[in-house]
Image (cartoon, rainbow, N blue to C red; front, side, top):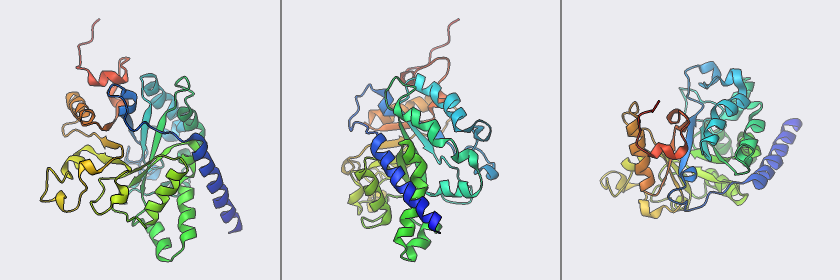
Length: 316
């Protein structure tokens, strides 16, 4: 137990120091034509395969490691102009559970070293701009939920605040050491005095950019100025001005939210590239940021801004 407590303290000091040194801030109002800030490359990690023994992580990460993933998947996107990336469930997820905030701890306990080893060494150069001529890159580590997570709830119910914080710090350790922003799943209903809200305040006070999911409730104004990540479909469905009889009972209005709105685009007919472009343009026209699978949409030497242009036949 002494070693465990020492490990927690070490991670706490090291991770928070890293967040201070490498914090990345995105301008509140990016220029309309600055696609590198208005488009986020969405990379689904946990959930990208059905292999449960690998925590449903594909991308050949077991064979290539994070270094190979960055070299073969990320760097071509950086060359195309990408400057913001969201890695969704970076340490995996299982099909029979909600996304876990402590997924790093679960992957480590499962002995899946390919998900944890080399993570910081692979991502830190990306964030610091080593591959983009010194221009920094934001990487959002979208983790799971804290509220109602069995491991965190057990500690909270026991009044073990130190244990709760220690588990949260370990869960954040690798993303913070790399200099990443943090996404909190299913957090918009958390009260102002909740551990979830207080943890986001702590991270922000130390310079780490934070995102919550999804639309804040109208009775949770403490979230109104936070950055929000939400699926495009739910953003529209939860708009109380469009659906006053349903969302109007609980949801905050669009004009009440002052943080950045990141909408994850999944068109209803995803097999048609035109639907991706149409929905992407619509999100940008609303003044919001679009998270899309850029890796799957780019090709043939295209750049990020080409995603907004009409397709033209290839010429010999």
